[in-house]
Image (cartoon, rainbow, N blue to C red; front, top):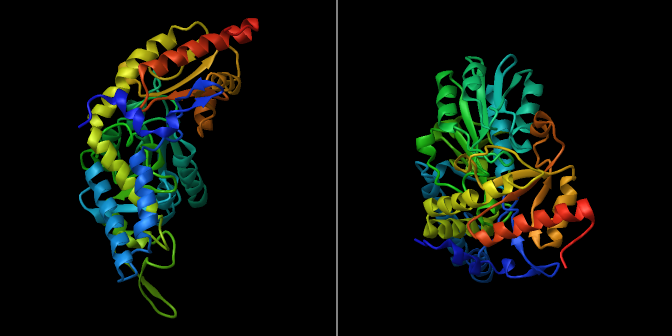
Length: 414
């Protein structure tokens, strides 16, 4: 286990640079994380030594590639405590995994008059698939709203989820509000009414220990790139009995059992949902990212980020003119911190911070219904990860003060 996370930045060469003549402070981790040397080296090693297609060759390179590909699947299974590797489906990312569930399970099980329940703070990836499914099937889409503190209103959820509900889909952690949703409780409520629960783990898997069996979620999707893996690779976990009953998502090579002229049969899990040549290198790189995180320990990752939130959030809230969204109590707030500064447009704030070498995100964060619910069009967003430090937080605070001075008085530091 790595106990001192203040030293891990050395594994990320991209952080050792200047932007606009300032030390880079990367605070856009909710959009994508940086990759450590170990992940990059695993990709190079695969392409230089083991590159071959998997599952369809008996030569040495194909067997080595297949072994690495399947070992990565087992690493992910262990990482989220799934019962078996066959329940781990490789996807292009979290969005792809959520669309897979909507297009297969949803298509087969939702009928006119049924209900789909999501929350108002969902990322578009966990909103549009259900919105479009409801429109297509003439089902009712219902939204769980938020408490005054920006958290899921669990009491309202209990009234919205009924015996007509077929699917409940909620993000485990918000990419805007900095909250962790009570998905174990929501899954239990869904099951009481015969519905399945779909978890969006994009903002949770990189930052906290996940146990899908303890959560008792039916499906759980996440991306590799937010947890320091390559882009273009993701995971969908699903309970075996549900996956076996679902139709394929796409058709082609590898997902077949046998093809006749006028009908076909499908491969066993997980291959039924992995048509065509997959992102083999991405899967192997994701396995290396899992190794990296497990070497540090997810409890250490979460504790490090929480310490940074405890340090940064009260100071940010104390800045005159800054509005922070989500819980004001640092103990209830993740490392995703959305804020606005006075009457400045978030894009102007982000541009000013970039001039100080600080990378933050600005916009609606793929959560336009949430923005409308909050009466906003956009926010700035700083998001922390394991390689960030108190010095990064201090630089953000200082740059926000300087941004205020510049837009209020037209002065900058000497």
